[in-house]
Image 1 (cartoon, helix red, strand yellow):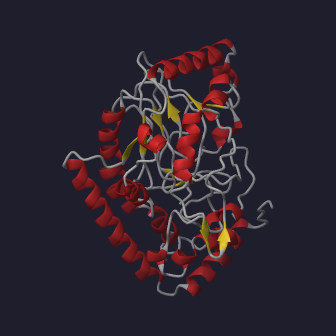
Image 2 (image 1 turned 30 degrees about the vertical axis):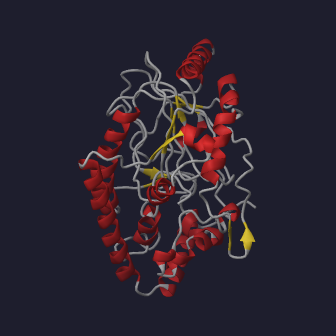
Image 3 (image 1 turned 135 degrees about the vertical axis):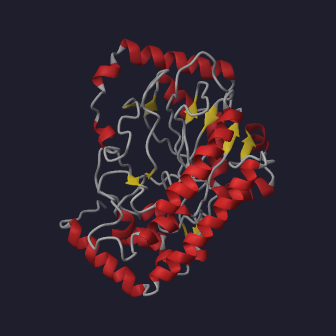
Length: 375
């Protein structure tokens, strides 16, 4: 069922009033969340400075054999992200990358897709043109989605979720329907280094839609420590406002397969590796310094931005201390491998990354919380 709002400002005012009434100590609860975010950031920074991998790294061979260690799985759930290496071999990555490059060039897609509707989804962000091409069904994309390797990765990641809770079965983790997504290509020397901090998969709806509020029931009740970012309860029922770049399909992780080398600072994926980051974002909007008809700048049909006006703790303490630095460490380790990134909702998509002479061979996965859901 489509989600529609006739008067956005009034809907925000009435929803915030109701949420605050249900959580009269929202300021105190938010201070608790801030303190926890600082604690988690400190742990991550110490790991990085000790030369440890902030984002858990999994070998595809272990996924295939079913031998991923339990402590590594626990860390994936804590960080909401992982890197899965050696999903595809170098030769396959190079072949796919060359074929996509030829397809884009021969069809003049740089000019044809310059003003694609999908870009408007990111229009309020700092870098609103992230070299995303509205190509969904090229041969390499289809081959990757249907590959045995990617299917194994998706089933593994699906099974990290709690598929049954609240007396219901929310989805079958062993069933992986095809999800078609786009291609991202950043030529060498690109001025754009990607998007500013944001969350996909829901903007104002996270507060306004009753099913989203059920997903975050523990957060809005103040019992936020019970929130489980990997509990699928009510997620398949959430509703989003119509947008050319919005899909209502529930995906456990989101990400991409990168086919080429990525160096430090090249604008590749950066994330806040805290699975419960969304708790901070949700409660921040209820604080008294935010206008009554505003949700920290959230806008319908757009990516949910994490901005310096309201999210200083998340951006400076987390995004700058963790995202920029830990991902630098991650990129250094991943630079020569085929990467598959999955952010907290399943994204068997196939964006090709920055094109260079040598393809990598790593696979990368990430949480969906403060980049894109399923937070």
